[in-house]
Length: 192
Ligand SMILES: [Zn+2]
Image (tube, rainbow, N blue to C red; front, top):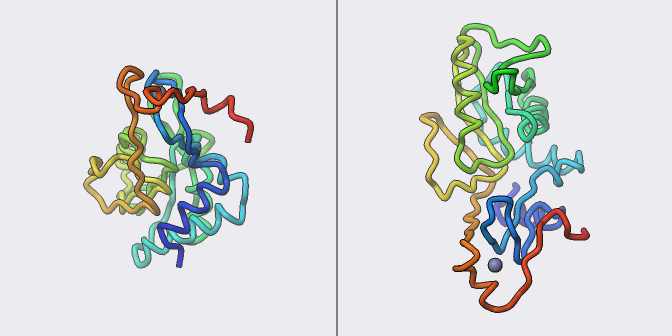
């Protein structure tokens, strides 16, 4: 049983969830920074996380697992392995919309799980859900490693996440870490 605490331990140990004083690309400041791709460097951990996620969908019997590129590729693949389904990904085409390329297909009536590494606004997930339905597929549910939507997201289908994280950010003028005189760093510049 992979508890939420154990998931957070894994995310911290693999440098996914960093603590400090970060300058985000949005210009805002935060005490935490999330880079989910880092855990997927480790296939055994990717498998462990996706196994736990797959267990949350026990009994649904999907035909396909799909995720949006890039963040959703490995989670869709590993969850597909656990559920013994096809694992595919959606990616942006020339028009900027989500598409099935590379010969991937969803057949009318197929039951589909949509997977993503981190859900913040849920925008990419919704685009993939629309894509699945446009191909005649039925969206059974949505799964992610991290839900950082602060409980704001509603996909209209069952949504399961391994962990919920509220990651607060501030405008620099309101940042309590700046007020304490702690220097802010860009996450990519950190030596880890
Ligand atoms: Zn700050």
